Image (cartoon, rainbow, N blue to C red):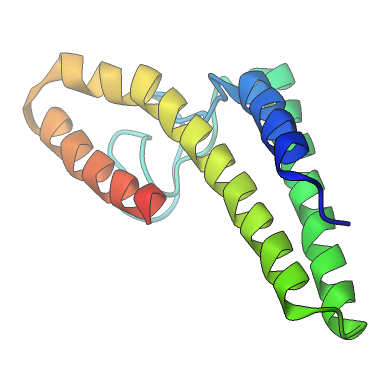
Length: 139
């Protein structure tokens, strides 16, 4: 079940190249219903203008992660060696981190960039949001 290190790096690199520019969908004008929402942006806002191919790539990557998590549960049920399970869990964490980084990249290029151009309170709010997001992704 465990892949060798070179194979894992190669497949992660391929997945990352497919997801670069992944759309998070947080664009001005999107509707929102809950959370701290600024003009249709932020927590609770709905995705708006997401590229179908990018959305499909993100979902494919997440489904692959979902399968990995199911296999980890099977390994635990079967009483597999702890180190093997830990290695698989670390691989899942790395995959999730990769998705988060690609979404953050898109958020910076589109949403944050637009907020920075506007300035004022919107800019200040975005700086705080980015600080929180980077802290979460960097953990």
